[in-house]
Length: 93
Image (cartoon, rainbow, N blue to C red):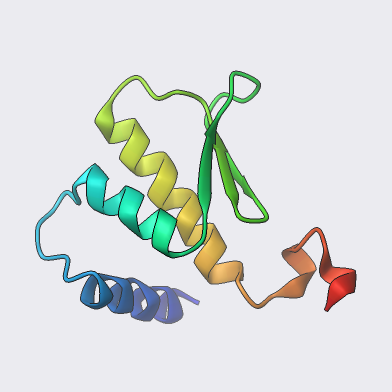
């Protein structure tokens, strides 16, 4: 599992030519958009969750939290992508 995640992370870094850390939030927003995901801010949750192709999250207090929430949920999306058991519309497949 961890090796696969490391491979996916490295592919992402290469694809977007990311060499500086922490990753700039504009680059993160670009990745989210290019990968077909959306971000929706809501007061109904405390942190973040991804459902289908939307990351729902509370409005973060700072850049660090924003970066963490987005990348954390994107990690769930990329790892579980292809595993239809985690999709709400799995009957379609």
